[in-house]
Length: 112
Image 1: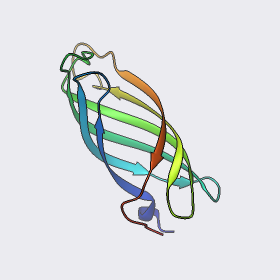
Image 2: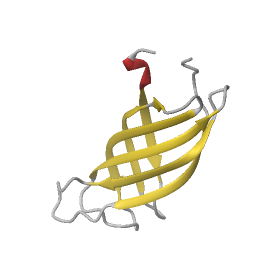
Image 3: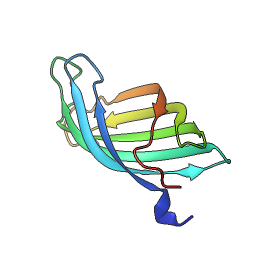
Image 4: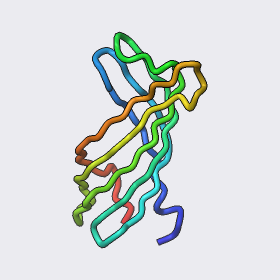
């Protein structure tokens, strides 16, 4: 496969706490570590609306993510994802937020 065929656009919508939301768009990179195992680091800049949730210190936030999934032949994936959301010290206050999640992913299009 060509290098650019491993780059994936991402749209992210996260509700980390009640009445707060993170909306962003970024890029991920897929590395097949074995025939069906996929390691995917990604970075997603976005906007965080606090609502009554945690104060992350600034409306512009960056989501860095590491993901390991098993991919079936039909491109459906199941796995684990860890991400960190931070304002990269753009604001005076930068507490960040972390999450560990189990994920199931269904493709819009098959790139194989």
